[in-house]
Length: 140
Image 1 (cartoon, rainbow, N blue to C red):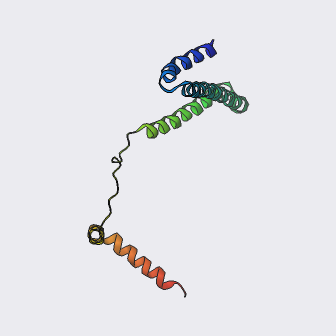
Image 2 (image 1 turned 180 degrees about the vertical axis):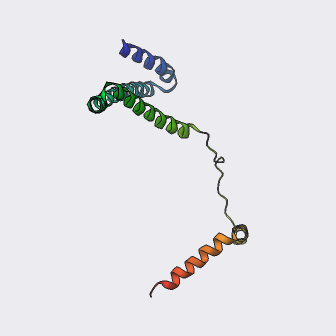
Image 3 (image 1 turned 120 degrees about the horizontal axis):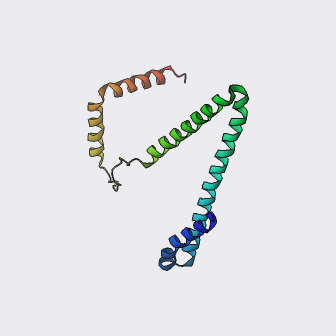
């Protein structure tokens, strides 16, 4: 029954692609949806087997009351990790839109470097001093 629903979903989503892009695009979309569905089912099965193995390992150690608590903690930790990954993957990008780089004249480059040096005097002087110490301490 599940396979029929997945196939109907794939066919329904592929129908616009078939008319717009031809048969190969619809076929690729169908294959993508089918493999994605298989991946989801496999992941759920793998998670179940891992939890079962953890249950079998932990139950003799902590008893019938502690084992479900440890499994609940493991599932909660896993859900929190997945939630954090999703949060950082789906957050809005703060990068400005792409701008075509412009060529700078040597005068503009010098002005830019002078501006950075003025704004960041201490780090620039520290870096220069450390570089000088490092370069002077090398044997030639």
